[in-house]
Length: 422
Length: 164
Image (cartoon, rainbow over all chains, first blue to last red; front, side):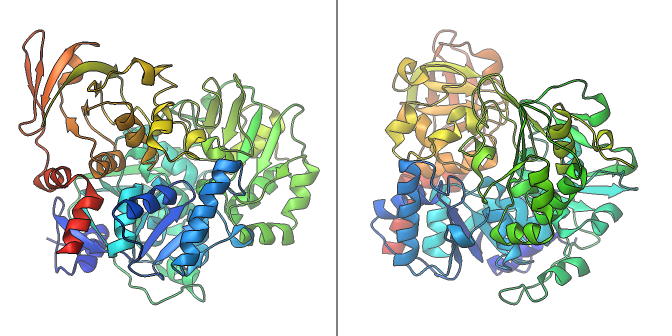
């Protein structure tokens, strides 16, 4: 029997010819990622056993992005701590505020994570890099510390579920809707411990940005990783961008899947996930009348240039509804610059949106858009758990950037058709 | 290892934002984190819990973020063990890595009452309801994870290997 792409990547990094689901393997790590939330605890773990060294300074990435630019003194202390760690160990990939970005948008953009890599990160959305054909998974701070120290980590080879998308994509439907629809179908533990492998003619035509969005939310179904087979589009994306050589892995035709799901995308409308679980989805046509206070367009899920372009397309010539806040957060400095060059900022500012420096900020209720009691937000982020964006009695509705922009204009959850003329 | 304590029951899909809201992630001290443990679900939880108490939950406990602050906060307030129908995978790893024992049991949450005293035997995976005497069997902890617990968590396990 053949192997899935996930099994092949794990086997190659474990120095084995073949692995199968359930095997415990020790794998070499290509990139280990830490941020201002998770790295401080990892540093404490290293200090606790009294070993102040790292396995390979070129394989570690350190990015202050969650509460950076520093939101308060405690966050500032954490950012200082990880900066000093980066300096002390001469970490190659450290990104200070002026060159940073939300980690999962920055790493592919900078060609640091590559197809065929094993990537671990002290952040659950590390699974994003499956969008470019890497095995990538989130871990806690102790695992991160262990990987930084030894360059290896143990994994149980996950079972794989194959998700196949066929048909046409409706207008205003993108990767976000496909993954929300999928999570709505299988539930927040529908892929628990598993690899989600995304295939089919629809995802073959989907941009790298859309694939990253889908892989990003694999964790929202409980998955260990989400993954796409790299193709010509992937190779084109990394041309002139890849920081080192990489290997392409593809699933064998006779690879084993514990489950196969097929979706006809012609039937999928833009999706909205209602509070308080990403699986609580409804098609936009069945949302009803839900007034809102805030819209956030950004995050590791939907803060890339393509997302901002869609938002601009909907916002052009429109204004944000009175008493509604629209916060737009380009995910990296490069995206920020490009959006500015393309004139998107003019459109955003004319629409009365505010544009933030890259940060995870409001997605996890950190800063730059925290909700008050009873407030409702539409967000292009990935989680709508109780209190995630602020007060325990606030509410988050997850959507794609087009629906989020339209909702800001209408002051209630709205379909893009309601505000885009012609 | 045998624990004895009273049961705190939780539902399905208890996420890490409920266990420890992200606004407290600028803290790293386990005791400080503990002061906000579960505050969204049970206000004042940290004051109510007695050392040795056990959390019994439905499926997918600890879903959401990778924050190790979540099991750290739970451990810091004195919870000895978590029993759930299933755990989110990052939480599962994190708990073992920091030395917080967790057990998967399909029936405990349906049959054990809130506040009930139970006894948990980690070695055998047996869970006993001290009042009714009812016995439950959890999925055995994989040998590799047992080794981690014996060594006192992943870093101590690694330190031992590195010293060899």
